[in-house]
Length: 232
Image (cartoon, rainbow, N blue to C red; front, side, top):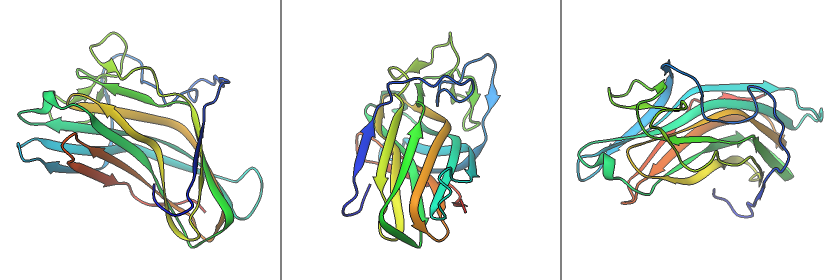
């Protein structure tokens, strides 16, 4: 996150809003293999010949009329996933790789006090293999997010949170939803379902672009950007 005067406040939700299908950006449950569409990807090969690839897919945005009815407000919902795939001679030995997922928000002008608020019911984060979601990258890269497999959850589902971030006066504001989530091994995936965003105080067209970034323990960095989507 960059920019002078930018602040971030993280407030954990203590209440549970259990609505089927929206209750969590959660681990996908079920049997069999579900094909996942890849929207964008980027990769780099490190000095030891390992390929680090970052992907985004199943991206969906739904812009909705703002509940406050203010002309300078925008609301949206976001679904999708971000994944990291490391292949090569040392892929299984990777440790401490960090995954960041977020948005770039673009707009011509922002009023004083303009903000974006993101609400995530929870993030499903999984590492492992033998999966229920086949990203179609290489034959042995299939992240298993179903129960009863050897997929390993990276702790519990990442807690629900609200992020309140000040907008820059104009231009682009970078908004991380998940920042520097560490994992070991060659594969990781985070699935998002029902992320709610509310932007207030932006004048003119508002455009959103999702991004995902992986940084290895050795400092190799890979970023991928989704297709920009106008929200109003």
